[in-house]
Length: 524
Image 1 (cartoon, one colour):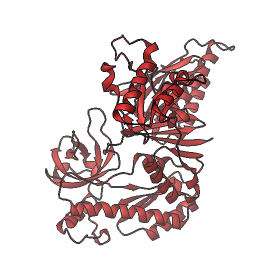
Image 2 (tube, one colour; image 1 turned 135 degrees about the vertical axis):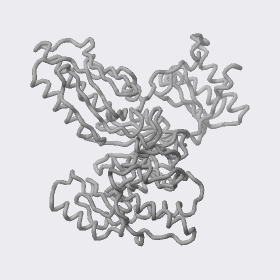
Image 3 (spheres, rainbow, N blue to C red; image 1 turned 120 degrees about the vertical axis):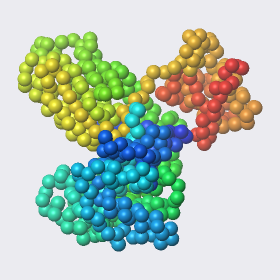
Image 4 (cartoon, helix red, strand yellow; image 1 turned 90 degrees about the vertical axis):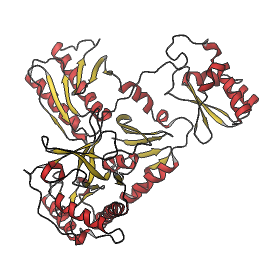
């Protein structure tokens, strides 16, 4: 199986696609200005105590206060609280964590009103992003995740991932990290650490300790509340940290700065694989070049076609996600209705496992498969679904088919489900239903080019249009493009873009910056 990561960096957003055998299986997109994400650490103030919920609301600078439950304070909260006071009491000399005293663990059956008070400063980390009407979810059990280990201040234990089965390897890793970890620091050994040498683990441990020291130094110096003291790595690097596999065939980035960032990260965790990070410099948009745009258009939306006319209908609600499996206009199999139902359901299981990863659907998912009479067929479908979900990094649980033919799935919900709107608003009529004659479209484009060159003074630019329009502009030896270049200079470039509608267009300068020409529509 070949795996490739495609990173599309735009001025306002960054999108990351994971391809397995050229098929899109994971897709993440967020605005580049977004500063709120899982893993960020804040020094914040308790806004309001809620004894009935045994929780409190904390102001972390978001529009809705974040939620912190008593059980999420963690057993080491008393140690954290005392250390935080020691750090903030001396603004010049940083109190080292190795000299901090460990206090007794917090009682599990305690109450929030006896532990916290309104206005108290706490060090918190985001564990769940705001979803719908709910604010972020917080914890006081801080953690710094790396490729091989997770550092947890004040934990003072070494735990090994249960997925590492060999007892000799578990013992080796535990003894190794116990000998090199700093005092008052706990470590969780991740599955990817299996078989790694001490130098690699020690190097990452030092990196994570440095992140903690930088964060606590910010706590010491800042007086503003709330204040972010540790920001999770960029989206591209954060995704790679959890996804990275030495068997990757390539990581392609279309931005110089992000390319250097990703390359530095890969050189740190896998120096021998730094060659797979490549900068994409083609004129065609990077997602179009790797056939990602077309897959996004076909994979998102309410209806998803998957095999021989069969399709899924996916509905998102506040409480859960509902999936309906339909055979569509598919012809029946030779062995009859039962065999046909099994084949459609198995195909749906394959596509659904992909959709869960692709849309990052979390919470409760209810799937209405086509009814099957044979118990062995229902068991085969359940086993197929379990097998397909093995590559899913999110924690999940799958129940066998109920007597109503429903399968219930729970999947870890950390951020809102990815919902990409694949419907396109008409770029020329803007919903009015009336457009100028399409035969005059190239004349409209030429007037925009004339304005760019003669009035604005931009001599070199790239005109992005639908591939069919690009083919029309480029056809014949004496093409429209050639005429434009003869009239306005060789700086006129036409680029086909699959993300654009038929009569939609976009202008970009030689540095890839978008040029907004839409405001002149009414005058042309």
